Length: 274
Ligand SMILES: C[S@@+](CC[C@H](N)C(=O)[O-])C[C@H]1O[C@@H](n2cnc3c(N)ncnc32)[C@H](O)[C@@H]1O
Image (cartoon, rainbow, N blue to C red; front, side):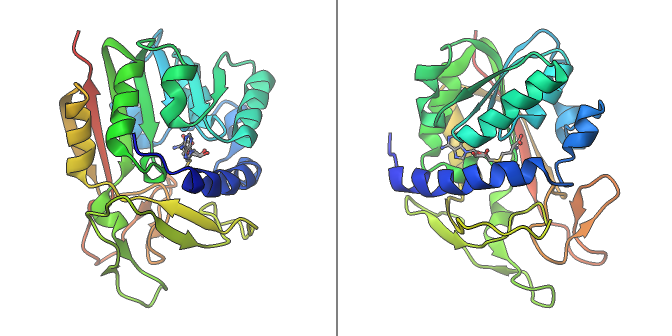
């Protein structure tokens, strides 16, 4: 498996710093969550189906808001993330709300050594996860290893066809900027602000990311032995990818009126054969 330890170090510093800022942000709405509000987005809410009683691993769970929402829906949930800060906040939230969930710290690629192999009915991975991973085929093997026979992966992610586009400022056009077929080298981004749009700036400004083509994601899952059950594309996003996007009442972001719609998210369900 190809590993890129310096990229992991760079990204971990950023995520450790971002976790408490995100947990305090209006964007994530922790207070609403504590008051009982379900924090799953509309798309994953509808697509995930009945999870009551299922052993679920939430890979790259951040500070656990979705993991705990899934546990509230009856899943036997384990959140997994490499950020000690995020995991500490997640454990604190679980204790404070009395929601039963387990949180384990570790790199995605080390998950088979830290979590029960074949121990989960559902692997749950959503928005802003696989772009941090250099080796998508290695990730697919990790997912396969964690799933019990008959278990499935639910993946909702930023669409690579959108991630290769950029709009620098509101008045600029949206233009193809990055390679769709990226290769091993990370894209190096620099930016002090985080997507929660609360004006907070971070000291760790650099991130290393990868655009994974749809063929590499689906191909990787098929090569790992999973079977694709369905694949969807969506024209909305839960964050502002382009400055001209418009925030809707439900908190999702749409392209502005009159603009072409674009594939902004994709989702899929892939099952490990019994
Ligand atoms: C945008 S957040 C994911 C948010 C997620 N959709 C949720 O449910 O809250 C990305 C997360 O990936 C984690 N992460 C990034 N690279 C990782 C890696 N190699 N192994 C484990 N976690 C990683 C970060 O710490 C961060 O919490």
